Image (cartoon, rainbow, N blue to C red; front, side):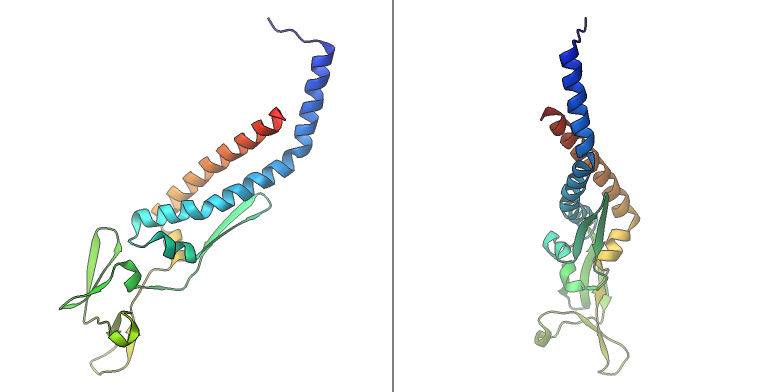
Length: 172
């Protein structure tokens, strides 16, 4: 049996009116909170597939909340193969861009003068040489597997955060 008296209905109406007035602020706070967590989620998803440290991924990530929208971007500058666990071998330079898939670049080398940065000759002559790069953080974010997992985790986090904040407003 449910009992409702006039005072209880009036209190409920006032509480609901207060919550409705605070909804835009609550949505903005939830978006800001999810944007802060977005960097962590992106780092986790990228490092689950690619052989790179989370700290290096974090240096190239940026997440902001604009209104109710969360934008996560990565720098498009390439990352040297050195960051992907690269090492000099007798046959060339070896690196694992994706976890568990080490590749050999024949003729790759790392001069001591350049602190282990990998190079490869353009032709048969001594010069020119080019730096060996792997994918950028932006291209890692565009990877279908990373993007699907990231969007799923973000939507779950956004739903949970918004639900938590709305219930908190109702309890006040």
